[in-house]
Amino acid sequence: MSSISYMTHDGYEKLKSELDDLKTKGRDVVAKAIAEAREKGDLSENAEYDAAKNAQGMLEMKINEMEKMFSSARILDESTLDTSKVTVLTNVTIKNINSGAEVTYKLVAEAEANLKEKKISVNSPIGHGLLGKSVGDTVQIQTPAGLINFEIVKISL
Image (cartoon, rainbow, N blue to C red; front, side, top):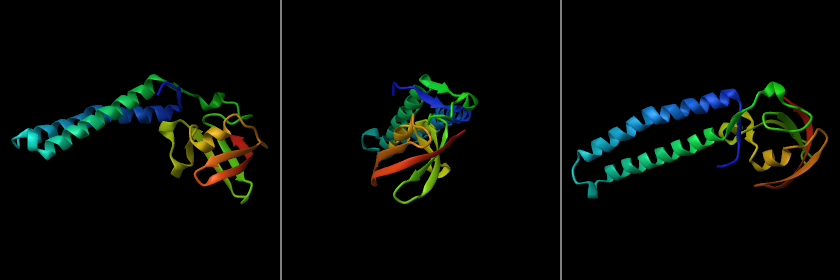
């Protein structure tokens, strides 16, 4: 992950808190599980020990990925963004030209994406297709459901 991760201040703080939690509580839980499994005897035939070691590896991998994200993180101030074009942290209302349905999404960094909150990643097919476009532009985006034509109706903060 060598590309820059753009984040809001809140998103950055949330991710930082999650990372701190994984480094402290997460590591403690895994260490205790390994210690308990060790006490049960022969490690070569101990499934609990293998599972605990796998959990430790997965935890360390997640911590490593999050630290890489922080090393390339840039915190954006929403008040300085230009709303003449779709950029990271803008809200964009799009209309499906075929169905007429309108939906508003906020374009965010991968780490902050949450479809329930209508926050989509700039790296998603729709997010990537909308970047740099202006109100009135029509874009054709390849989605898992097929090729869809959208019109950009509104861009705001």
